Length: 358
Image 1 (cartoon, rainbow, N blue to C red):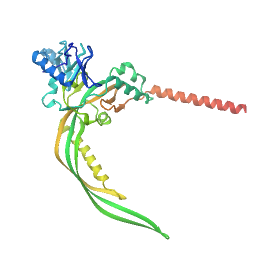
Image 2 (spheres, rainbow, N blue to C red; image 1 turned 135 degrees about the vertical axis):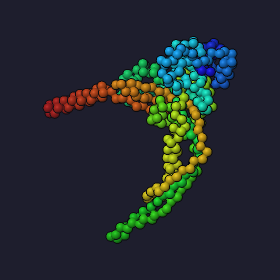
Image 3 (cartoon, rainbow, N blue to C red; image 1 turned 90 degrees about the vertical axis):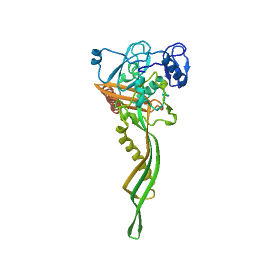
Image 4 (spheres, one colour; image 1 turned 180 degrees about the vertical axis):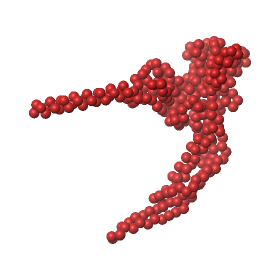
């Protein structure tokens, strides 16, 4: 299959995943369906009809399309849906129905896990507005209705790393005691050789697997609650965008090991207590039973352009954690400066008038 939509078994309208109920919902007849019901219905429809195909286009048109894009045929209206090489769920710009690009979710690119959205669009907009009220100097148009329409729910591809680690540390520790006796001050320093080792288990250490998603933003909205992770089903995707990974396991492994090594080092270092000074001499890690899971994690994202520069606002679609790297409006800063200046001038004038009357 190339492209697919989830249709309502009752009325045929498109079905989207509802974050509030954690079920598929038809906005036309208001029917709701479990993930299993939608999966079974899609399989039945796929067997009965051959409508999920990659669009056949002319050689001339194919040459005009960027090498990083692909053309599909919308299963609902037949219009062309153009997506880049990493998009796996999108919308048809003609019928506005959600379209899942199933060939991007197969083989090595089929996720094994997903954390569904728990925060819907309305809640995401409320979080954005509440956060913006605390930022005095962002441009006023950032919270306009036009901007709010651009906030997008997207499943970001992640690698989740599991491993067992044997960590060891050698350190030199000192106990320093100072006391005074008569006219003299004495200092005693005891020096110890300290060794620590630990075997630690790590599950679901996350690393962003998309070059399009900003690493700083993704780290800032972590952690996700992995107790709510689900086995992957395409039925969680309708109504949201989704990307497939374009960073391989080998690409992210150094950063993952850096994260794990930092955690192991912290555990060992914090176990050395009761000393005045501790100096680490050596630190080693040995990895066992390492494995990866490919997962899609939910993020609400808004890209804002100001003075020809792009800025990012992101919300964890499960927990509501916020990240914002936004511009400062020079106009608002100037208005504050003028207001403070005028208030200071008025206060000074009133104070001078009172002194003159005396």
